[in-house]
Length: 284
Image 1 (cartoon, one colour):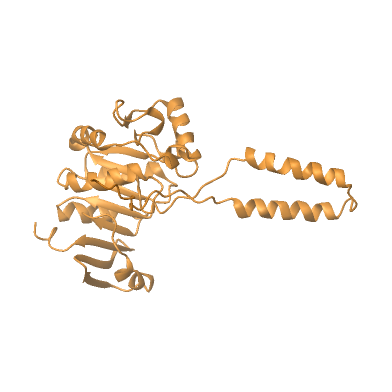
Image 2: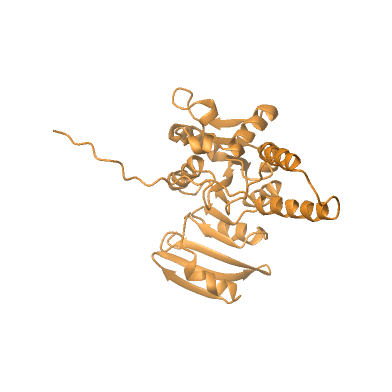
């Protein structure tokens, strides 16, 4: 006899935080202060009418959401596409997660292969993501702008619940906050890669994940991306504790922890954190 055990899998779906709750509270407080200077007496009937109207007004307000330290992924033709795709698909399925990929830069020679492979790995989005206002707003904007998109196969994924890669459209044209999708840009040279990402301003990118086995190209890109301070080379989610304190104190440091090399250094006048798996880069 086969016994069906209850699932113990932990849900990893993350939803963005609302950023305007406190602001609404302050507005109400100001209105209350202003009303105190006017008519102090109010009938019970008027108070009840206002109480009934308040919930309806709050429902009509478009809530604004906060980005959750989004990441930019840069994939070079010499990078490990298999590992990069693994982390990319994780972000497509859980787009509001901490450190999830929000922007993808791909070298031109890899575009066709990446698009074909990522489609086969897409699964339907969790209902909490597909029903979220941020994702729904993005679908409406995509329908309006009609950019080129990479979505899941139609026989497996419904159009209103698919992970989405949008070509050549910055996030700012889709929403003011998190969009629930990944924007994708194409580059030819390392120098071009350091210019294309500027289209995404003012997206608050917190880190850059670079996939390239050539050391010269990696440091060339790091040196020209002045807006960012954290670079993860050939890796994605990495514990920042070994280098965090030293970086905050603006000190030079290098150490190895749990198979990763951490260093903080000054490049072109800007302090950077660079992390990579030990033995993978310098071995080449």
